[in-house]
Picture 1 (cartoon, rainbow, N blue to C red):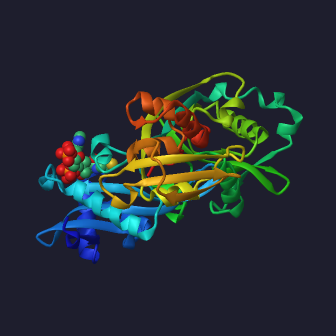
Picture 2 (picture 1 turned 30 degrees about the vertical axis):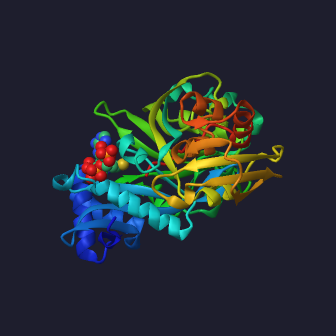
Picture 3 (picture 1 turned 60 degrees about the horizontal axis):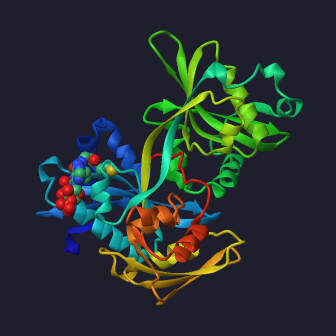
Length: 398
Ligand SMILES: CC(C)(COP(=O)(O)OP(=O)(O)OC[C@H]1O[C@@H](n2cnc3c(N)ncnc32)[C@H](O)[C@@H]1OP(=O)(O)O)[C@@H](O)C(=O)NCCC(=O)NCCS
C-alpha cells in the first residue's frame, strides 16, 4: 500500500478532475458536480493518484448514527468513483483501504454507505446493516375525511414554515432519530439538501400544538404529462401518532390533483400504524452497508437496553485494520458498555458480520446459521439480547 498515493485533493485542479470523474461515473450533469463537492466540503475529498494525477476519489461525510439511543461517530462515504479507463485494477480497493486506515487513526467508530456493488465493499469489511424503503400510497387512501378526524388531531394546526432551518425541525428530528436505530445525526451537507436538491425545491410543513412542533415534512410536487402530480415527501417526522395523523390528513387534502404520495424510510415504523388501513406499498431500494472502523469505540459509543447485564467474549477477524483483529471482552450494564482487550474469544466473528449484529439487522443465531459467526448456544442468546432492537433503517440517501 503506497500511502503517498492517497490523500486529500490538493487544490481546485484536483477537485475539478474528481468532479469530472463523478459526472462520468454516475451520469450526473457535469455542471452539478462541483456543487456536490462544495456541499460535502472541499476538505473532505480523498483521491488516489497514478502518475501524480487522481484516478479515483470519494467524499467523506462526517456525522453520527443512532444505535441504542446513543449517537455513534460515523463517516458516510459518497461519490466513490474511478476513471473508467483505470477500472478493474484495484484503484477502488486501494482508495477504500487507505480511507479506512485514515478514519481509524482519527478514532471514527463507524462508516456507512449505499453500495452500487456489494462485493467491492465486502472486500474491505462493510456488510448489510439496515434498509431504506420507498413507501407509496394513493393520496386519497391516506386519511379519513379531514372532518372525521378526532378532536385531538384537529387541535393541531398545520403551517408552512418559512425557515427550513427552524430549530424546532431539528429538535423533532432528533427526538425521533434517537429512538430509530440507523438514523443519521445529520451534518450541514444532509440538512442543506432537504429544502433544495439538484433543482428540486421542497417546502416545509409542520403540525403545531401552540408553539410546539410535533411533526413536519418537506414536500415537492412532481407533475405528470396528464397535468396531475405526485407528492414526494422528504423527511416525514412525527413525534407522536397525533402528529402522524395530522400530517397524513394534510397530504390527503391534495387528492383532487395529486395521485400518489411517496416517502422513504422503514417498514417497521410507528408512522404506518397511524394509517387506518395497509393502503401503502413498500419497495426495498437498498440495504445500506456499514463497517465497524474501530471495534472498541463502536461498542462503547452505542447504547444498550438498561435491562441487559452481561459479558461477551469476542474474537474479531479483520483483514484490513489490524487493531480490530483481536479478542475483546464487552461488558454491558445499565445501558452502557465497556470494552477490554483479551478474554476467551467465545464468539468468533468477522468484522463484517459484527456490523450486521451491531446494528440489530440480524440476530446472532441467524448469523451463525448463515455461517458468519461461531459460538455456543448460550453465547448466541447473549449476543442477540445485547444488540436486539427495532429494525435499523434510514430515510436519507447519500
Ligand atoms: C465500482 C467502482 C468504484 C470499482 O472501481 P475499480 O477500481 O474498478 O474496483 P477495484 O478494481 O478496486 O475492485 C476491487 C474489488 O471489487 C470488486 N468489484 C469492483 N467493481 C465491481 C463490480 N462492478 N461488480 C462486482 N464487483 C466489483 C472487484 O472484483 C475487486 O475484487 P477482488 O479484489 O476480489 O478482485 C468503479 O467501477 C466505478 O467508478 N463505477 C461507477 C461508479 C460507482 O458505481 N461507484 C460506487 C458507488 S457506491
